[in-house]
Length: 295
Image (cartoon, rainbow, N blue to C red; front, side):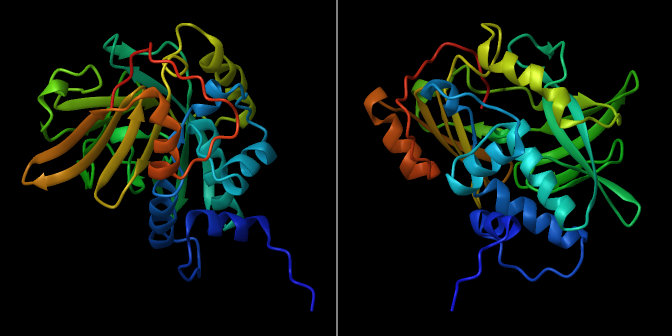
């Protein structure tokens, strides 16, 4: 008997380990889908350091993330996730956000972050599986202003300023066992961390193509001077940023997060990508460690 070929959606479910029963496009299923995705698909920019180009063609993204078991950055992961939601019958609208630049303590001057609004029973939610690091939301956020929404990583809240929605995260106290990293520039000590701002104007995928190229090639890009790979876990997040490997445990004791940080030798980095993130790089990896980035 001839084996039935899997549909793309079935392949996608296998990639994120989603086996739960699916009845309708409701909030419960959306939460499950997001949690599976962020714990299976890393946020990563490793293509830049392997001589590969990041493109926004859907088939290329599907092949990279689903079939080659790689990760992606926001324009890849959120595009794939929003496709799956649409296939499952969710009412989605893709939006664009302006990320906050911690080094400059100000927002970037351009829209670069791909996010999705999902409407369920008339109620809007923000969905984002492509932010990475410790700012990554674990579940959809209800799109309401001035309401703290607790999640594993911390409390999130939307505030409005000058007609824009701003997403902020309230950060717990940070405990760092390795004193050598106590003053690491990877750490944000601000107890209220701004992530990005946005409005409700719908965006097409093509509107991100120019910025996607810029982020890969510009010397001013925060995403092309340092290899970044992060993956959410059941208790926190693990991250390789440049040569620094971190395992973060959220709320390991009341009101505090544990940041276990160490330096990885350059020749050990590819091994770490495979063991900690499930990524087996095919191209020659040429690391850099120049740009500023916040864990």
